[in-house]
Length: 121
Image (spheres, rainbow, N blue to C red):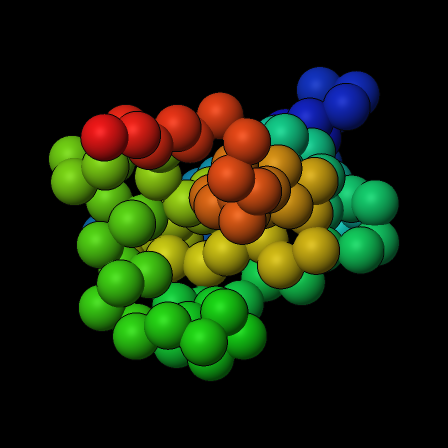
């Protein structure tokens, strides 16, 4: 894995035995401990304010069913999916990030009647 900011990684060597009994030197890349994944930079998780939570926790915090959260995070089911990250089969949401806050603000429904006219008959 490469460091998203500097493009550097650490390479470590290890020895292993081949089927013929000879030692072989294998080099593999090991991620830096300080490496920041690119998606974390994109979602604002590096600011220290984002907490990665699962769909059950997001549903609890928003006061909606978990099925609603799962449905709204699927880009095939909505035009404006909830911002999320996938870790294999696990989906996590960046609670406290700028992108989630902007998404939540887009979901607000105005209680102001301005702009909503009724027919007067």
